[in-house]
Image 1 (tube, rainbow, N blue to C red):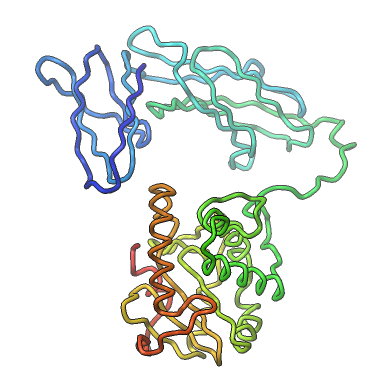
Image 2 (spheres, helix red, strand yellow; image 1 turned 180 degrees about the vertical axis):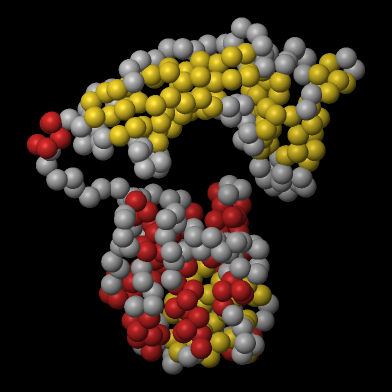
Length: 375
């Protein structure tokens, strides 16, 4: 098997490319899309067409054989919690398969949900892979699925896990993990919400290297990073904390929220933090009804809510989509964005250019406006 990677520059349009293969192949797959590409003949050699979107890449797998089936087999059909499962995967092919054909293994519990931390990468070579089980793993039938990384064909087997007597002696489990793993919403109180919003505003106003790093790169240990702050903002109950938001504005503070800061993807309205139900836009919609709501001439993606001396600046642009192209593109976009916001006096410490404010339509729905830009 051979892999061919293709990248299309973000400055180009979508490109349809024809690949001419100089070696015998039985099948060509677009690995990222999980699709088999039709093989054609060009000048007596096999070829295939693939479309590469702007700023993205494609990975093609050239197979000298045609995979027709994948089989998963466990050495034992029943284990006790705490014991390891020996799992192997094989495939049926039109010619002798290679030993380094990759696959991924996923385990589904008795409730039908994936078992966290049980996934593995393996080869479809018949050699067993050890899959440990926790002592406190719930008893029941576990389905182990082995899926070919190239063709996406899969095979599965079932292993029964019985309870371990040693599980009763385990100490209580300490809470650990990502915020999105929590079974209930993280309690972000008024004081913490105010701190998060101030940190975010100062991040947008700063121009030093550390601020650029915190703006564009996710590091869980950096509390001031934009994405780390966004995790907690997405968990916060903004409706309950709306009075604290009003108090900040009444004191004359400047709040800046851009794109995913409200917990939603501006392109489609989907949560930007997994397993959350963000409430920011609902609270901001209520705030908009009680404030002076204005658009900004020359900045079509920006709305301003004035409450007393305070300003809340909401920008529906999506920094994350700029960062998906690469850090250079994101930094360039960030510099242009900051310059435009400073020119309008909208960042903390700036003097707003009130001549550029235009009253927003009285029937404007914030949710519809936020997802209308498709930035």
